[in-house]
Structure formats: structure tokens, C-alpha cells
Length: 455
Ligand code: MG
Image 1: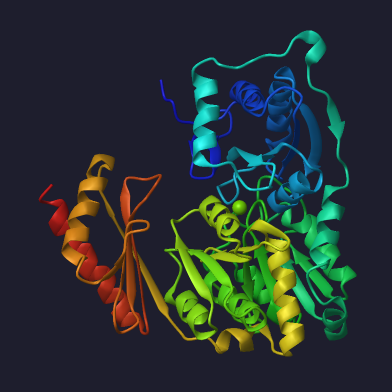
Image 2 (image 1 turned 180 degrees about the horizontal axis):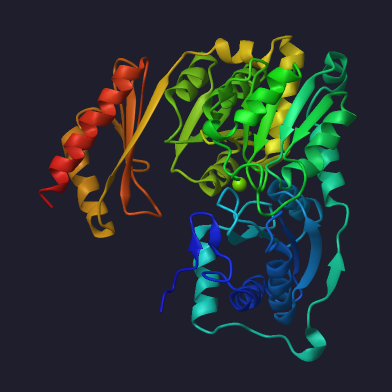
């Protein structure tokens, strides 16, 4: 029997195949046992068709274990995380499979600070689940169930406290919001109108079949956003992932930016106002992040890949800003988790403050070209291969925080990293020109293949 439920970001699976309501009830009771009888737990879900089904199943399990459940209904992941903290909950549950395809759903557990539970805490929940350690409450000690209807409004109003509303309103920005037919369309369009922006929405009707586009916001799937921004002469476009913690942006010219570029815009402005501040980012981030932090005298802290690690590191280090290349920005004055609506509002604040468009702000950054590759191998060969590659490259400027990252003197870099979920090694190379990036991927793929043959 498998003893693993949690992956890199909660429990995920194909609905009614890998993840069933029976499992959700048992998991709810296990999570309830983990938090303890009498504790208060909030629960919410994104637009997926199975959201209400799993929310009810998990709620049943939690109440059986004696937890008082506060049902938030449909909301984005950052809105539920904010409410967990804001309503002094002991914990939270988010029913979402984030950017996975429509047939998936997932269950994510949140600690009282709004941050996802650690892998150690997840292992504890797994042992309760698999080793039949669930503690059911007696009939007169069952948990209660209360509706919490206003979390989206509270979340929207909280974001406004972190920006200069007068300056933004004076600019009358026009923003196109691509909500991916999910929860990204709940708070942000309303928030933007309230702060004086004109809003055009696409894929804003809630539909868990995701008819507009897949929930992963990748530049190649955001052609509609780009076209609409240009057609209506908007100042900016934003596209959310399925649960609206990640956000990808485009400027007025319709060019879609990968997350590093917008993160660098935020870092620069933050460091200009907060010299010497700490910035947290996974080792998978671009050299652009390193350059920007160095240029504006920030203290960059690299972490392993994974949003939970970034959040935990920010908390431990007292850092206020973190970010990932996939479009996740963490702004701790609001909350130390990825938050798409907060990111959009921060970018508008920076545009209003500097008087520059998003395209102009991105154009000021150094240019890097990124190429990716992968090789397949069985999971048992990952560790030996990682050791061999490290032996080969250890004389270079190397980091082993997660996989092996090498920084070269000509400002190029490569990250070679075993996937946490698939039997592959991934390579991410970047350089000042495309040819160099491509050559790095080719050279190191060849080196990996050669070393793999010796194992
Ligand atoms: Mg997400």
C-alpha cells in the first residue's frame, strides 16, 4: 500500500479515479485529527466541477474529527489563505488542482499563518491516514459548520491598503483580465474598478471545464489576452492560473512576459524604497533576478524549488518579497504567499509611481534568453547521476541548493535538476543570446547522457 498522498503541492489526482469522495472524507478526518478536536478550519474551492463535492466530503471528515468548519465557498487560493489568517483560524483547506488540467482536483492544507503546511506536517497527516490513527469525536462533540460569506470582499479590500490609490486612480488604466474561467475573476475585476481602472474581462464566466484555455498560464496559450489588450488599447493584461495565486502579464504591446520579468520590475521598485532588503527566490529563477537584486543593493536568498519553501524562508528570514519564474510573487506586508491580484495591483502602483508603462519598465531590464531540455531516467538513478554531475562541475561557480546550478563568467547559467514528480532530469539554461543558451542545453544533455551510461 502506498504511504504517500501529498505531492509537491498538496494531494492531487484525476477526479473519481485517483481522488475519490471516500478518500476525501478519510483525509478530512485525518486532517481534523491532525489539527485536533475543537479547532477552527476554513474550507473553500476553485471553479473545478468537483469542487463542491470534495469540499462537502472533506467537511464531513473534519466535523467527524470534531473540527468546527467555516465554509467560504468559491474563492481563490490567496483569498482563502488571507481569510485563514484574518479570521484567526487554526488551519484551512483549499480544494484546487491549481494549474493542472480540468479532470484533476486536489486538497491543500493551510497552517494558521496562511502558508501551506510543511512536508513534515504532511507526513504526519499521511501517517494518521494510513495507520488508522484517526480520532473520531463522540456524537456530542462533533464539529459545527458555519458559513463565512464575505472572504472575497475582505481579501479585495485588504489588497488596497498596500498601494497608493490616488496615484493609480489618476491614471485611468485599462486592464484586461483573463480569469481562466475560474476564481481569478471573482475579486480582481471588481477591485480594479474600485481603484479607478477600466476593466475588460475574458474567460471570466465560471466554468470548471475550462473552455477558454487550459488553467496553466503559459505565454503560448495566452494569444487571446495579447490580442484583446492590443484591440482595446489596454495598458496591461493579466492571466491567472486555475486558483489565481500565479499571474502572468503582458504590456500594452501585447507581448507576454514570463514571471521573472515582472518579478524583476517589483524587486527594483521595492529595493529603491527599501535598500538592503532581503529577496527570496528559488534557484530556478533567472540571472535577471540576481542582476536586479545586486544592481539595487538587495540581499538575495536562494531556496529550493517550491512555493512552500519560499514562503517558509521569507517568514524565517523576515523577508518581505519573494518570487518564482512561473508568475508567483509573494508580498509579505499583505501575506507571505503567491497572490495574483496583489501582484497586479503592485504593478499598477509601480506604473503610476514611475509614470512608465509595463513594457517600458521591462525594457529597462537586462535581456536573457532561456532554453530548456530534459533527459529521461529511472527514479533510482537520479541520486547517483546528481553525484556524478556534481563531481564533473564542482570546480565551477556551483550551487547545490536544489540539483546543480552553475553560473559562468559570461553571465550565462544552467540548472540541472531531477524532477520531484517525473522520471526525468530537467535542464534550464540562460545566456545573453539564444545560441549560447541552446548550446548549454546541448552540451550538458550530452554530458548527462554520457554519465548516465556509466551507472
Ligand atoms: Mg496555482
